[in-house]
Structures are given as structure tokens and as C-alpha cells.
Image 1 (cartoon, rainbow, N blue to C red):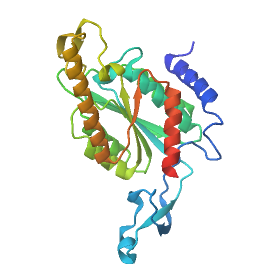
Image 2 (image 1 turned 180 degrees about the horizontal axis):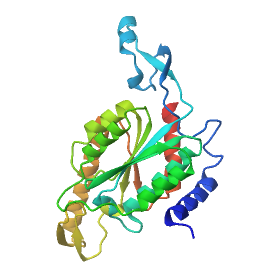
Image 3 (image 1 turned 90 degrees about the vertical axis):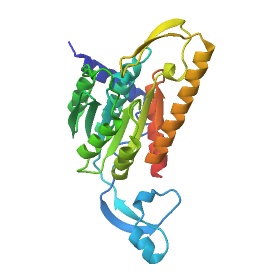
Image 4 (image 1 turned 120 degrees about the horizontal axis):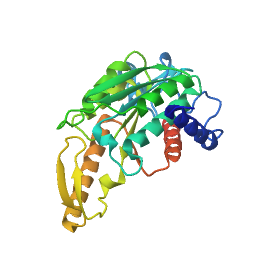
Length: 295
């Protein structure tokens, strides 16, 4: 009898095969390209170039912006940095944690099929786990197995230290320039934008923000008991109260604005997914965005 991780991986492989094969992959070994490390040439800066590749010494000497070009690696190392805090366990249906798990496993399998290596950093305030990058289906199965294990329970009254998660990611992935996926609901302590910017300076970073629709618009369920997943605080609320609904909508809008500003400061554009979306459609959109960015 197959295990739960194996059944999940087989199901996602079947869906990947039906939806992605022949649609996104060309002659290259993976839909996401590696980042080159061997310098080959200089050329004039173009509007679509990444400013991080500007050679400032040559630019100052020639009085025109020049960018450095690199030989692109044929083998890529990818990291999955996954927030497993208490707030990620919220959600209708499968919930945010399950959504992040399925997307992470799909990405890992898609990348590993080209002979590339995938590692993972599973983070919670109560502890973290680092799975060193390796290739092959067995590595994806190992990541799947760890993601399906119950996350450790944190201390009551604490919120997620997102900055610590990103600093851990920067330290763990420092040996080689990589493709890094950060998956989180970004509910936690402030101040994560600077370590995210530092991670982006070294690696190609794809931020995936996982959201449940109930976090954006409160459903009308009458009087219910709600609990803050991070702190454990409980409160009895009347979800049909129009004043309460309006106040919560304003708070949700303000939080969206704050998160967008933090992403802007970090120099990234977050991919927002909800727990009721088609994950394979999300994955296709992420790949296409990555391709446009490279061009």
C-alpha cells in the first residue's frame, strides 16, 4: 500500500503531465532557467535589464550604463522556503498550508525533472528544518513527506518572525546563486522587507503569498467564536454586523497596501494565490511571468 506522500506526488505528477507537458518546456532542461556565474561580456544597458547586473565601475569610466553578461548554468539549484506557522493552518476547505504544500511539491517535481536540484527550508517559530538540495524523484518525495508531517506547535502569544525565516534562507543558500521560492501568508512581525531585499540581491526570488478568501472578506456566518491562530486570542463576533464588516474590510485593505509597499521596498513582485484557485493554472502563470522577466 502506498503512503500518503507517494499518493500526493503521484496525483500531482499526473496533473502536471496532463496540463504542462509540451506547453511550457522547450529545448531547455527546465521551465525556470539557472543563474549564470561565469562572466562573459559587457554590453550597453537596456530598459528591461536587471539593475543588479550593472557594472558601476565601467559605467563611471565610460559615462554610459553597462551590464555584465554571464554564461547561464545548465544545472540549477532551487530552494523552497515555506512558512509553516500557525496562521498558515487557517482556511476553508484544504486551507493555506495544504495549498502551499501542493504548489511546493508541483514546483519541486517540475524543476527536478530536468536533472536540477531542489532543497527546502520549512520554518516555524518553534523550529525549522533544512533539507539539502538534491535531484531526483526521491528528493521530491522526501520534501513531500516532511510537508505532510504536522508542524510543531509554537508558544502561545507569539507571532511569526518572518525576518528570521528570510535571514535563515539567506544563510542557508549563500554558497551558490539559486532560484528561491518563498511561500507564506506574510502574517507576522514587521521588518521582513530588508532581509527579503538581501535575499533578492543574491538570488532570483519568487514570492508566493498564500491567502484565504475569508481573510479578505468576512463571510456572513452570524455570531461565531474566532481565534487568532498566531496568538491564541479568542473573540465572540457577529459577522452579520455591517459596521464590523466595514471595519474589517478597511483593515484588510490597509494590510494589502502595507504588504505591497513592503514588497516594493524589497524589489519583488509577489504572486498572490488563494486557497480556492486552480493551482496548476497558478503554476502556468508563474512560469510565463518568469519567462517574460528573462526576456
